[in-house]
Every structure is written in structure tokens, then in C-alpha cells.
Length: 168
Image (tube, rainbow, N blue to C red; front, side):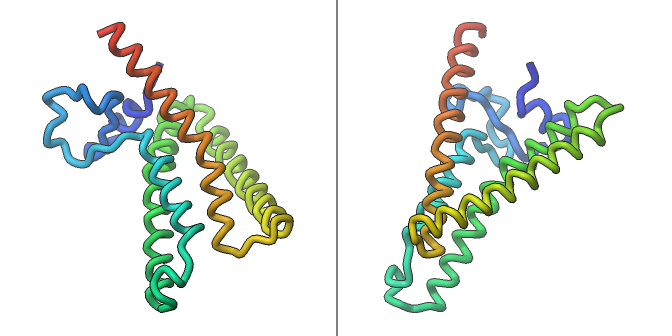
């Protein structure tokens, strides 16, 4: 089995390390730069989506300029958190794809990405019209859709930690 970490490290991302057990890091992991857990990405995205869905101009006493800057900061944070997932994933896909089929793999993943992005846009319009939601509340739907990713990530982490402790 190839872990996401292996694909990212092979492609020369020395500043990114994704240990599978944050409590049992190797001594060589100290001082290696930015260390984050891949499993934290959906959790960070959930927090940004919840904040984007719940914060209104009243949060900053009706100051629209401050509200716009706050929303811009939250959108930037959500984009950065998403980038910590998609960039290593794309690097892993490129690394693991057979050399003679790399174009097909990349074309297929990009096509599926655009299909599901279009589907998500249609789904959000339907939800907005069905539930009569204001635009900022759409992020609450995004947050709800992130919860299965969090459950999957934490279950995967537990399985991997159990396997590491059984086979040192």
C-alpha cells in the first residue's frame, strides 16, 4: 500500500509531513518544518464553513466593511485548508498513475471534478430555493456535507494507528 505521505515526499514536498500518529512521532520529525495531519483538513474546512454560514453583519455591529473583510478572511482560510488536501491528492494521482496512462488518469479526474462541481452548484441552487435560505446559509449545507469526510478521516486514522501499534 502507498500512503499519501509517500507520494508527497517522493515528489519533493519536504515542508509537508503527514505522520499517521501525532502522539508517536519519530525523533527525526522534530524541526522538519510545517507538520499537519491530513485528517485535520476536513475539520478545518468544517469550521470555516460553519463560521461562513453563521456569521452575519450583526457580528461586527453592522459594519459592512469589517464584515466583508471577515468573510474574505474566512473564504481565504477555507481555500487554504482545501488546498492542503487537493494539492497532495493531485500529486499522488500523478505519481501513482501508470506512465502510459497518465493523460487518461488526469483527464478522468479533472472531468469528474468538473461534473461533481456542476452537480454541487445545481444541488445548492435547489436547496436554496427549497429551503428559502439566504446566500450565506448555503455554507451550512457545505458544512453538513463535510461531516461524512470527517468521520471517514478519523476512522481511517484509528485503523491506521491500530495497525501501526500491532506491527511496529
